[in-house]
Length: 151
Image (cartoon, rainbow, N blue to C red):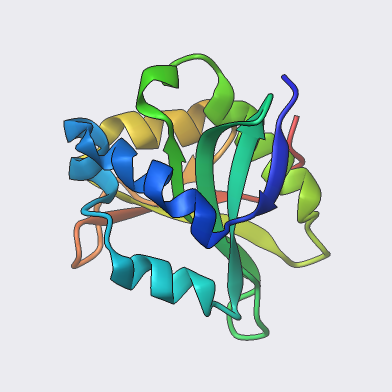
């Protein structure tokens, strides 16, 4: 799959925002608004990527960088263009993201998934991530971790 990653640009926002007309995406990651755009455009502790396939915006994903206190990357969001779901794009993006940001000794990857989103949990588990506990935190989130090498 030929995917191109680029830093998210303001020009990408109108199309990306339109994806949130999809009820499932809006329920899981929405609502999408100008506050989100302002936040990611000024982000310094992570980055947001637009992912293209043949010039078509097919996904958006974000991450925060490891720190001394928290030696792990965090996948903050992964949104696939609604009509392209279940085609393997998410897995390809996750593997490429992990290749672009290779782990250093002592580092890992984490993602926080809402307990009410079993499809997201299953997606990460199918890609080799381990759920740290089946009991959610006080915010209803499960933590999944990846410490090995991506395929």
